[in-house]
Image (cartoon, helix red, strand yellow):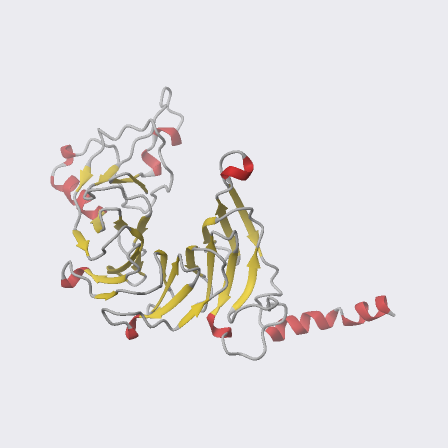
Length: 338
């Protein structure tokens, strides 16, 4: 799945000629094109974890919703209507790869949106689905707004927080373990956590907590797939912070997890990048492993840097387990220092 200008392109990796030893196959084209945007849609893109629904936002201020099932239904009704081999999206094997500048999309089938949602006053920077419903989603944009939508009730915002931050909003993520908690990151250098049960339309948003640990605009936020209270944030300051909101207000931090002079909730800081960290993801199969990408183009002479890293487990394990393990080495340490 990839957003290109005014179109969203969908690939099924099993139908792509460059995935097979096909003689003469030199180009890749998408299996499906999603139309509906009126201007570039470069930043905001999401796929529902529960149904084959795709969501996008763009410079046209639109939030656009598609169902890949619509394409499958068209194929069932008229098998000759599609020119692309295979079906797109039926088995969730879409690839997150851009096809490149020489791609040909003219022969690919296309579908129109299920809905177009207009409520933002400026570019939509990020979108995300509610983890439990493909009909509920939220969006953030350069108008400083956080908007919650419900496709079942129409195309108007369900809730529109007009001043969720003091500057543009760049990113949003919905907690997969607690569907009431939503994270936002902003050009005001902060991450905010909202409880949707407390949100009302208009005025200034009332976050559960504001996390202040970056010195530049926050570009990406993402909840941990393993623990409901843990999330990460990355920013233009080149730092990726790991937070645990359950630690806020506690007098005793977990052994090894206290960053010196750190703001509440911050327990790890990854400073291995040389420029702004534009994106990162937790590994869902190995939850404390993270892949992060920085925009090092100027300092490295072109391109960026991808890092795969993991913090030592003494940082995030329960305190009693860490103390018990360290106690095993107590006699050895004392004998070396005596």
